[in-house]
Length: 74
Image (cartoon, rainbow, N blue to C red; front, side, top):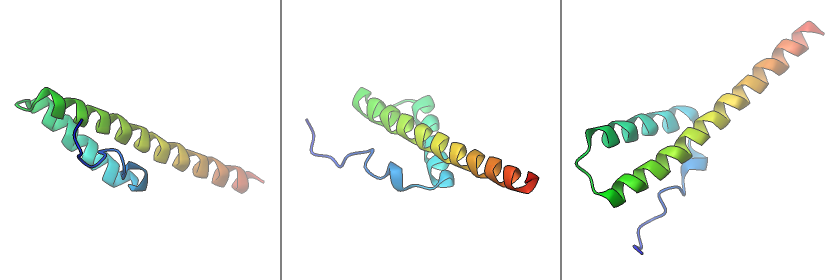
């Protein structure tokens, strides 16, 4: 195993835009090809984590909007 830094370590600290931008970059790199299988797997794993982080942000935003709408109706 390599001693490289964990590629998923900082994902939880990213805001939505940062995670989305990194995800777009990863998709582009994977689609372009020309990288090793190991790097492809590492990128895919990070992409999965970034997608999950984006979903968390979007779900949080939805909950905030729902709460604001509910408060307005009361």
